[in-house]
Length: 306
Image (cartoon, rainbow, N blue to C red; front, side, top):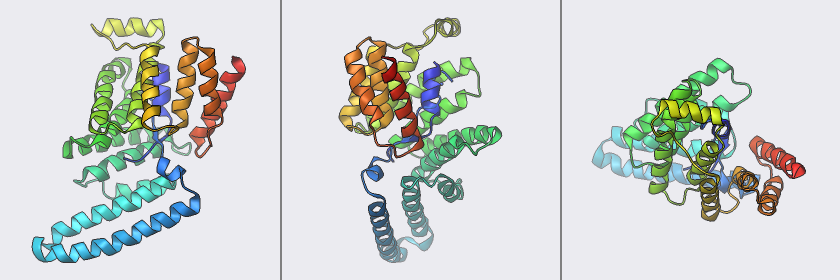
């Protein structure tokens, strides 16, 4: 159970679109598209996209203004512009700047803006410079933004994913009964996210973490869960392994933590040969973020223990 929380509580930098021991430090979307490019190339492409957006949006705005009225068109134009800026800041790792940009639009009716604000609020909460009081407030704020994003567009895959992640975070402040109860809801939203976007390796990975966490649930926590629920959440390492491989198949080498979990799961299944393979890949994964460095360190420690 601690593994889920640990997995969900880690700042996730997964691709745009972790319970305490249940589903806490799971995610940080891996900006794979940005990782695959050099820094200067990222900047050039982002600037080009920004220029194209500004010019194109102006033309569209002027054309539709005559037909639909300025207020509606301007709102749409502004949302697209903010999203473009937000995605650039996210890919650049500018967490605080991104939050300051998006929080200005917390009353937006746009699901795309709202789930990005949920993600940005959560990322800000993960920073070491954020106080414990601020972390808690941001956790609840994130959940509210993600909830509103779902209300605005139930068919938005990213809204489901971030609602599940943020619900897990809030569970850390609500006690074990709520945490376990939320586990069912969390998994449902990850599954819905995958249904809406089958190519989203991140959501598949997170279900794998969910399965891994409940597979390694300590006996006393299993007992508590059994007392609280007629049918408490359960899983196996085999099931977790299946999801981690599915994520890797959907998007090879997309996330250092997926490689680490593949190695850890094989260790739990006493398959040292495969564990060595995946842990070595995790250790050698290029460290683009602080989380990647933590993965490298854990992978090396596990390799030395085998």
